[in-house]
Amino acid sequence: MAKEEVITELMSRRSNSKIIISNYINNGGGGGTLCKEKLGNIAILLQSTGADVIQLVVDVAYITDVAPLFHLLVHSQVPLIVRAVGDRGLISQLLGPKYGAIVVWGSLGDKPELGLPPLRSIAQVYNLEFINPDTKVFGVISNPVGHSKGPLLHNPAFRHTGYNGIYVPLLVDNIKEFFRVYSSSDFAGFSVGIPHKEAAVGCCDEVDPFAKSIGAVNTIIRRPTDGKLIGYNTDCHACITAIEEALRERQIINGQASHTSPIAGKLFVLIGAGGAGRAMAFGAKSKGARVVIFNRNFERAKALASAVSGEALPYECLDTYCPEKGMILANASAVGMQPNADQTPVPKEALKSYELVFDAVYTPRNTRLLQEAAEIGAIVVSGVEMFIRQALGQFKLFTGGLAPEDFMRKTVLEKF
Image (cartoon, rainbow, N blue to C red):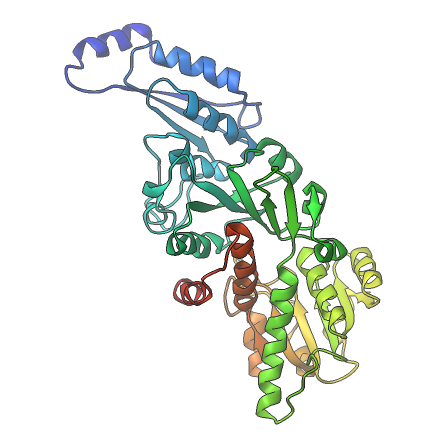
């Protein structure tokens, strides 16, 4: 902090100019414990200098360290600028205007840097000029979270429907601690991503029965009447209906249309036994498929297989697995997701036994797995289609109303 005599001299010379005094808080290299009292005392000390505006720049180790900054913004007696440094501090800028920040920082590039949102996103995606104290906060809880396209879809949909909400990326390490700290009714709803979908079940006060049977939730709503967290799973319906429609289109072309699910009786080969994998396994089972599961952690594969009366096989056998023709392959792992877009969970030669290949990865939109599946003649279903469908279900839960499907689909096609 500047010496007292320096500040006194600046005050005497400032004429009509305004003075901002800034303080950087190392916070133990990002590993210290931030508390409202400590920050409050520092703010009072800064205010005592007579500066017109004060600024606090703070190292944060966890997203929960940002909460005291929001509290300080609300209760500051002078104009205040705050910034939490690092990827876990990104929401300090995106949500700052809601709590009274007079300035937010952004990066000049198209990607966040050091927890700074791109200026282009501030203006075109988040529209921070419209954020106010009544704005409801939604977001995607994930780790990593940078790949998520949720903000590109939900924020425009909020504006299109006139709903006063903002949807932000939430880089969360400990989901239970996140919900303990961000317990305000302002934090109204959440998408849940890797690797938190199973742990999220235990954070909910109530869980939709089907989501409970799956053992994973991808959507959590804070019920307005009592503040309780309610968990849902929109992944299952999104994935299974996308696969069914693609198969039905092929059946119609071949004159084989049927009222029964085209998945019934099929061998459904699933890669991944995490939250998304559980949703797909239970969905496929409910449609009468025979489910076979491959996962790097074989014990997790066996546990999921037991839950759906399926079969688990060692991951090393996936490349040579070919008991019959016309199988369905569903990738629920992160293999092939950016920045590792050159990877694929199954080599091209092994795809010849599959009638349809589905990939839950949607960044990139056309993964290597899907490219190679299309080249050998299989039906391909992109994770973008699942993303759209599960997002429509989430948006209905977020707003308590209908989602603008045509608008959201058009947004995805234009921006993804």
